[in-house]
Image (cartoon, rainbow, N blue to C red; front, side, top):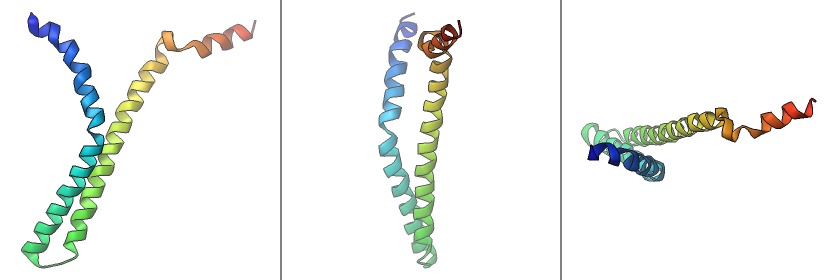
Length: 97
């Protein structure tokens, strides 16, 4: 029963931490990509594989930004449909009278 009381309190904290960690996840994604590139370069001796790893890291960072954007957009859509925040449409209906 105590766990049920703590879940609603923890959920907003976790969502806030996810939003704050976007910048950190971008940096980590690029660093992991550089690490993959350096590892491939060391294993094969081909120098341009370093840039392949950097490209993979940048692509992962862009994907993280896209995921965060789409999540926030879904939240915005929920708020737009909520009648409490939908006052603009009510004003438009009153103007027609």
